[in-house]
Length: 433
Image (cartoon, rainbow, N blue to C red; front, side, top):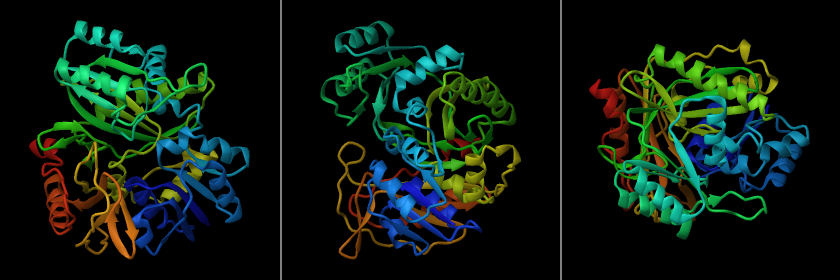
């Protein structure tokens, strides 16, 4: 059977790589793909933009695609699932309405409040003066979120009032974060900011597969959002991740399912937007083991996907088919008992002004226990070059977090491009446990 993966990041490379291993899969297309998918002989890149929903659906019809898997939030927000379903095409992902859990921070916070899902206290603003005044009254640390898609960079954890005021200006006044603002009642884009209380604790990524009623949880993981070692510097889309996350104990796992995931799926159904696809709950777990929801994403995380796919032993294609058939109750996933850890190599100037066009050299051969997944890379005149902020994710398996990190960093050290930057402490929280 033929499969189409929509997207061009490291997440999509990892999903396509895993789908290609399916027993019933004969061909995997990636639209538009990247330099890594172009170099992989098991994958075929397709030059169609990920928000060109009609062209993507036309391609699926023409090439008799059995299953389409959506990677990025932009495609979901553009309504690709709605278009495919209207044409009777099998696609895994949420509708445009359901994807508001990610595409609108205000929608998500209102939803959580309405359905009693644990999260931080918040207020929403469109007026910069009112937002600045609220922050002055609330104090720091405080969290500033853009109400719109921003490629994972629309959240600022402000440790000082100056940082909070700067973030408000970036989002509501000069859009320095490149946010795609959501439309107001008149259809015009309205800059909007969600300001919420700072939650203390340890973060974890909790991702489940949903068929509208039932869920199957994937392996837990932990992302590293800050640019620099020691969790300092600006927020990014993610500088590395590992799986499993030891902070998610069996007790915490049960709480997350009972207090966050199941109420969310039930609430979306009650609100008339049954949720199908990947649901990602970004969690903050306090010292008492109580989880609260930092954010929802309506797709797999990046770079969490890379280590999760390295550990998944089950057939991803069959999982997606069950999810689109509404038969997830028949699924029991198998996982590699080892740890997988991924280190992101980012471009010069990331996250605000990443440089493009630098030649990439020193890529290792793919291995069963180590893979380099591509994100911001492209083929240019036969040369692999940087084409985005997060360029590669070097991912390896190991018997422990320390050993997985050691292998990933050995491989990362051999990869070269001008201005390369990466954190040297991915997995530090687990190593210290």
